[in-house]
Image 1 (tube, protein in one colour):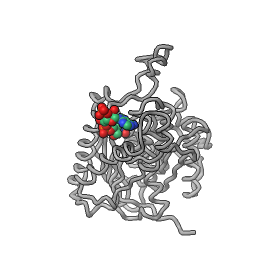
Image 2: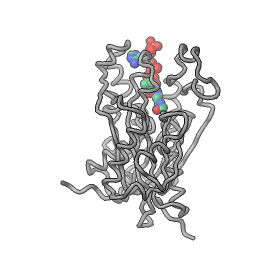
Image 3: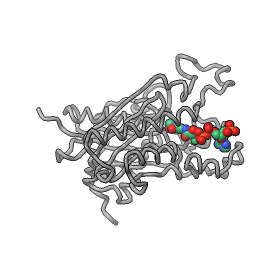
Image 4: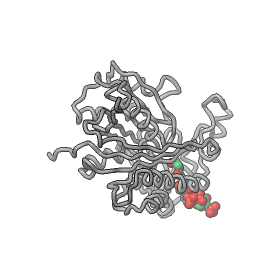
Length: 336
Ligand code: UT7
């Protein structure tokens, strides 16, 4: 039996209105706009103060369903990639299912940090390819402000809140959709990027709170070194494996953690910076949301066009990393 291909047939995103600028952070910790911009590329980030992660997801998904003209009841499966679920249990996917009224769907959360959306897209695609399902919602969403220590300048300048979502359906044309992927993880990286308490290793106590163990910890330098190598290697690998050159790729869609990591990846792939989706300046690192947020923004702007080959690449806690090659199948939105 010939395998079906999975294609992205709709995109949506939500970014909270409230903005936290570098100038505002200058008043909170010992930092400055110049340091943040030159070391990371970030100018501002958005903060969600209207509820949990699922509320951002609902807004992103409603947007998507409206555009596609698909009802929530038609969804078969919901995968939410997040490290900031509403609660430890139930899964945010179940919360979302109830809130959007996806009565016929099942769902689960997936934790792969900044690679979460890529991992979730890979899992979702298998359900389409195998013929088990025909409508899978893949969501990347994080309310990073809920696990960020706003007294720690090493991390608080980096993160923001957002949600992005895509719908996967069987591709109508064989040559369109998700074509290839390279996925990796290396658990030895766990020491450099983690959140130590709240799980079974360190259940919450007064002590874990006093020691600020419920906030994200990052050894930035160590993570930076691995991220640069792994994102570039894995992007290079998918290009070589598919005999592609920089000129064959319309867009590189990288996880938005640091402008310098993105530049190094694009350079290694031989891709000009004008073909790199970049919105880190506006949103910072929104963890699992960065890639679907880029896809949705670029599609809405009419810059992501049917037939274009794009490469998605991410690196995050775990360590986890990967790349994906897609031939974009969704037609540009109609001009009003
Ligand atoms: O998304 C998941 C994966 N995460 C990543 O890919 C992030 C990877 N890491 C990074 O992006 C970078 O390492 C950071 C942006 C986090 C930090 O940049 P860096 O160039 O690696 O800086 P650093 O940590 O080596 O710090 C350099 C200096 C230090 O001062 P000294 O020791 O040289 O005196 C820091 O204390 O910059 C200082 N510093 C700051 N200064 C002003 C650290 N944070 C700040 C800050 N403002 N916010």
